[in-house]
Amino acid sequence: MPLSRIQISPTLSRLLTFGLASAGVGVFVMLDLPLPFLFGPMAACLIAALMHAPLRGFGQVSVGARTILGVAVGASITPALFAQLPTMLASIALMPLFILIIALFGVPFFRRIWGFDAPTAYYAAMPGGLQDMVIFGTEAGGDTRALSLVHATRVLIIITLAPIFLTHLYGASLTNPMGPPATDIPVEELLLMVAAALIGWKVAERVGLFGASILGPMIVAAALSLSGLIHIRPPREAIMAAQFLIGCGIGIHFVGVTFAELRRVVAAGVTYVVLLALLSAAFTLTASQLGLGNPVEIFLAFAPGGQAEMTVLAIVTGADLGFVVTHHLTRIVLVILGAPIAAGLIRRWSGPRD
Image (tube, rainbow, N blue to C red; front, side, top):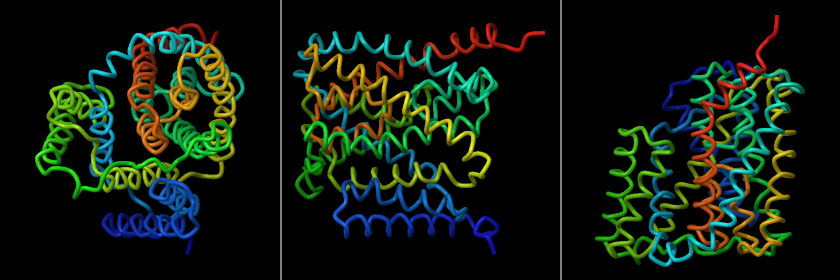
């Protein structure tokens, strides 16, 4: 019987997902491959998804895992970071131009070459948060499934190739300690981190903040860091758990993908990543040549991956989290604020003519 026809309960589906993802971690550890808690689950779930295995995500647990990364970023926001902001302004100023060029190339790419409708073409082209682009694109009348697959493909390829570029082109190491063990962190700071994660997440959700599971905890943790109540990022066990669930989530996005979707939608996503990579490389090279920052940090800042995934890479390379995240937040804010206006204009200008 084909795997796609096997019907099991949601609980068993999640147990299957967890088991396969854990096996992926084991294989990556055994082969001494990089980031086993991220790439192991991602690879295992992706392979199983393409085989139409009945996988299922972990729901709010997976969303909650992103709060760990939000706290990690917030804990890195110190008075010293604010002192660095003036030096970041020149590279941050490149971000609106970066987004504009992506739109000018990306929208026609999906619209004219792959035949996407106007809303789907715009939201597929914009490198915002995966969930945000799917939600906004759906509300604008776009194809939800196509948007989900295009952005999942983008994140999958970027997060897979970025470590290769970091190690081979920039000589970066992926072995920077993710954080101290939980036993080395004072209990009161651990409790404050948990409170920052949960309160920040839920309050941000209540007020409708985009990327609530990361930005809410980040804001609360930053306040605690600036007030001197926390002095260290979350324990490595928590960051490893976040990697595990993020890896699962990327792979699971491909559950149920059909051959027709692989041939059209996923192929469009793959070829678009090449275009995005070229544009990102051009801006990374420009910013590096102008001396606007450390090359590794500039690379991570302009890499069009997901904010959570880029945060993980910034942590394991020892990059300045504040620099990387400030650029990604700027990109995401610009994309989200401009999306409704731009999509309306695109629908008006490129809609079907009589």
